[in-house]
Image (cartoon, rainbow, N blue to C red):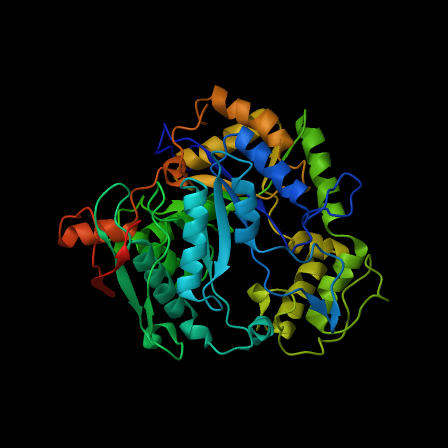
Length: 476
């Protein structure tokens, strides 16, 4: 494998984030050892363990509406989660170094309010905040915001770029800490933001030690990759199990980064993945099989297939074949999450039948097969070798690990895999800095570098595009 994919970054180190998922069936919530998915003690335990393991970041997703199944709340997965910024503000008080990544939607948030809340988290945490920028266009989620599906699908990244640009202007409206200057007033265009009114914004929150919150982006579509290439510091991908696939993704993203006028290493790649270890290869494989079967219970398998077919399949045998008839709905709604909204159900059913017949799979076996790649499975030493190879071939810069059980799911990784990486010189032995930007090895915020190409960056107030440049109030 190393011959096929040569080492191009021999000194590169592995970076870790932890993805505390919310709505999902891959976290084994029904196991007796599982803790609460919503109580603060669980978030605190995971964050403290990750910080003990010198992770870069603690990453939270977002759920703007509870999942439903034919009008009833879906109760077979982890469902519902508190607001990410609120959770991370609490975690900032009980941690010292780890970065805090909040997924926040650009479709339903006001840019001035969102910029203020994210910058507040950044200031209060000492420069450890990040914003994972996501979009939504479906009416099912939008109903909670009294807007429905007001934004066309094709416009969602256009609005995301406008919201992000406005937020950055608000963050940059304050002078550097300790320097004289005034706070600039920021204008936001109604045409760009697709809102009824233009806005004149008086920023309220000073800069943090890292200047801006770090920008993550998690979309994998061509539009999402282009958005990340032009705007983000880190891209969170789904390409975290097959090295060839990860290398192809990295090459594509880096071409887009260069096309956007940035150095190709300016965007760091952190795919989501899972890690399962055992004392021997056989023990690790046995543990992985057990985890997969626990993640997809018989009821969960029937629910997932029933969502595609648009009907209650609970009377079916999960160890039997897929339904012989076609789905009763044409396309999926938002009930299973925006990632599947609009998917054509008959096409999915046809593809699933072909796989099941070719491989001889039952309903449950098919769902297990479709539930994502296996990530990394092996002894702590073999997993450390694989992780190091991925980083040093240039496929990734780090990994965003999803624990299969909460809150103890990072224990093996921190206690057994991290020391193996450190012995290989492939992992830090202490935090080198205090901010998330320093942990990940990022350059200064993009607007600062863009601005400096036009004119030297000055201390004090900077009247960038969209800023009126007049003193709104003194920098206190």
